[in-house]
Length: 349
Image 1 (cartoon, rainbow, N blue to C red):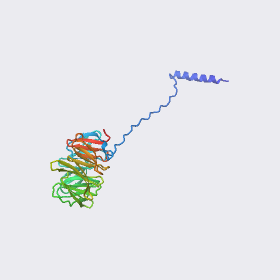
Image 2: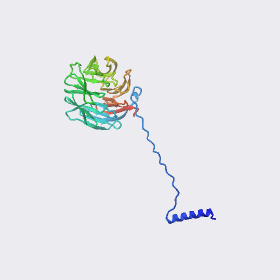
Image 3: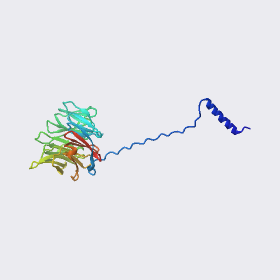
Image 4: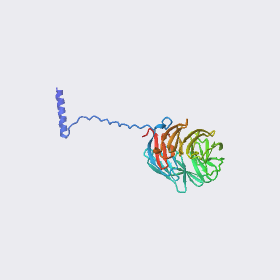
């Protein structure tokens, strides 16, 4: 009978001899290696909307330079567009890089740009609605007479006639004319009419005259005579307030800048802000009862009680001639008359 221990020893020796003949040394089975799980980089939270509770914490977050700017508009995608009469540049808020995205021929003028990316480009009695990103003409509108001004609200654009006191309203999606605005009377050669974002109310402005109306019904309402020419104006996002800026000169020659906030339904003044310098710009915040005004620096005001919540001086912001809130309300852009612009956010350094 075979001894089992001798059999095991013999088999083991044979295995080693065979491996040696083949030039190989048996190795123990390797242990599988488990790949390390990469650590995810945390995404910083988005900046909060600028409001009455945190306005005092606003800080400069970036800067840029742009020349011959007539207006600034934020896109719904977070880009800042700076607009002249002939071109649109985009500003990257985080880097300040300025890039040309649209330029029109010398015979045309860019009248307005909406947050959705359409530009109203006028040449005589014709207005093109142009995709800012691609330069493609979406629609060509036959306004019937020279067009002096344009403004967007919702999915509509208002074209203001230069030949007669009136305006036409067009659908930006279809290019169809959907209404008119008329009836305003003025002897002044310069005037404009804008419509509230919800399309409910209109505001006619001509020098020192202001008149509200029902935009849908094309009827006129309260008319107000101001002490001096209106320089800038805007509807609040909900259409319930309308702000104007004027400048008055006292008996001693001192200039007082004045912002008045109106109730379009009644024509009554609800708030008044004044300072010892002219106001050069204004803009309502999209989500908070807040108004930004530009002048020697800029100021944020509460539209609820009229309190100044933040004043950034001339030395820090320059002579501000343009102010614009981003569509989410988290960023404010200012532009001074020397072309220096700044981006402002809550808590930025």
